[in-house]
Amino acid sequence: MIIGVTGGIGSGKSTVARAFGELGAGWVDADDVAREVVAPGEPALAAIAERFGEQVINEDGTLNRAALRQIVFDDPSQRVWLESITHPRIRERLLAQLERLNAISPYVLLVSPLLFESGQDALVNRTLVVDVPENEQLARTLARDKVSEAQVRAILAAQLPRNERLARADDVIDNSHGLDYTHQQVSALDQRYRNSRC
Image (cartoon, rainbow, N blue to C red; front, side):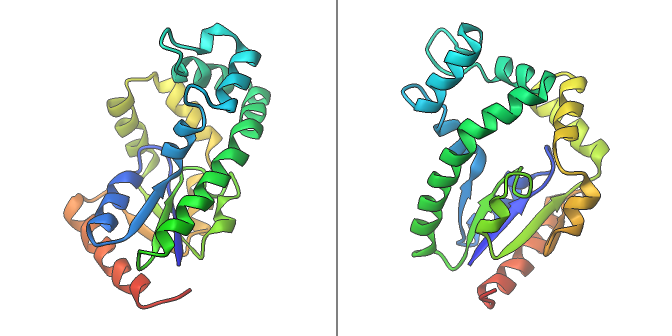
């Protein structure tokens, strides 16, 4: 069984995934895979460099993610182009990793900030939304990523609205009341997922 874990930026998806991992669940993070497909030597990085030039490449040949993020959030058409290059490659690698983990784990998590937006929810049996209020998302992301408030708000605007994400969830974890409460919710869902096949 594959559980899709999503939530807005700063909601605590990785914290929740690690908590499930401590209980024995395998997990794949779509953000990690997204970084892999734009690593030096990858075709996607070559295409990005060809389109946007040296401004998006660091001196060591890696992707300048901050520069690219600024471009795609300033111009939605560039974001659409970028997703057309990266999303098929991400999907292919996710499928391979999920298949490998499914053979050895009681259930598997696909952790993806854009689970619904990218269509990756088609790969999962259930969806789990990690939820916090938007003002908390903003505060956490500003503290963690050292980016401008305008950029965080642009990212929030590009993601599915909170109420729509919640409406599409099979399960929800409220991650706004401390780690102990989050772990209690994870533990209860772990038992449910182990005892269910759908």
